[in-house]
Amino acid sequence: MQSGTASATALVTAALRVAHQAYDDGRVFHDPFAEDMLGPEGAPLMMGLPIVPGYRTMRFLMAARSRYADDALAEAVVRGCRQVVVLGAGLDTLGLRNPHRAAGLRIFEVDHPTTQADKRRRLLRFGPRLPVGLSLVPAIFGDSDLAGGLAAAGWQADEPTFFQMLGVAVYLPAAVRQALLGFVAGLATPEIVLDYSTPPDRQSPEGRAVTEAQMIEAEKIGEPWLGLVTPEALASELADLGLADIEDLDLRQLRQLYLGEAPTSGGDFGPHVLRARCPG
Ligand SMILES: C[S@@+](CC[C@H](N)C(=O)[O-])C[C@H]1O[C@@H](n2cnc3c(N)ncnc32)[C@H](O)[C@@H]1O
Image 1 (cartoon, rainbow, N blue to C red):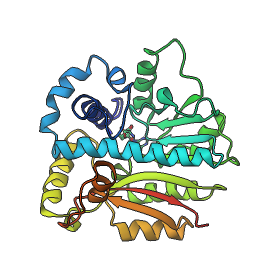
Image 2: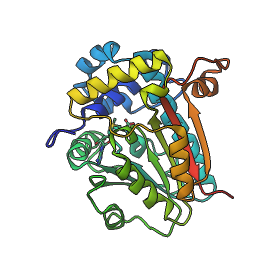
Image 3: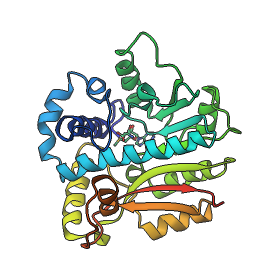
């Protein structure tokens, strides 16, 4: 990320969620705050969306990964979890939507300090204070003391916590991703939903073309993709950490799940959404 500038990719992913509300009626992921979170400066972004590589696929993926995380969080809340940590929150609106506020769910958004300062300004458009139950924790992954920052914001390390890390893993070098997953795995009842992308040489020709175009754009705006990983390597990384109960869905499986499409062959498009927990 370019220092001193809020994440540009966080704006694009937020705009894709707005487009999902506008053009797909939010049918996979309903987000009543998406448009206002993006705000008036979203208009030029929205106009530029059709040139985003794989635009329609990305519009679906942004909705699907948020929906998947919301559903997994709801299950965790039923099991008694009352804390969620959103790693690399960007303009995610969970803090505003908090579907489990009445149950006392606390949300800790962690993000790069510059992106988070911009997010705080946006949140304060919705009211004079941050939404009830939401805390903002500035941190740079691979650099900051994450546990210390969370604890200072009131996070209880010994209480169950659900982690969500969407649209972040591709930007992190493997060692930083592994350190974050290690931190999650070291907790009492670890659970995380994240998405990642496979390397282009593992993808279908269509997926590879989109990924390579996205990687060029990401590099140009100073947010290079540093963390592509195969499903096998990630599963083994997670299993080594004790997070061996894994559900890993590729794009076709997500389309089947949320759009009711028939299963297709044709190779891996690239993006995957995954949930990992301890077995048993
Ligand atoms: C593509 S955005 C995704 C935002 C949001 N999760 C979403 O789905 O819309 C990537 C996010 O990761 C954050 N990020 C990337 N690298 C980071 C790092 N090393 N430390 C902290 N945050 C980071 C960015 O600030 C940004 O908010």
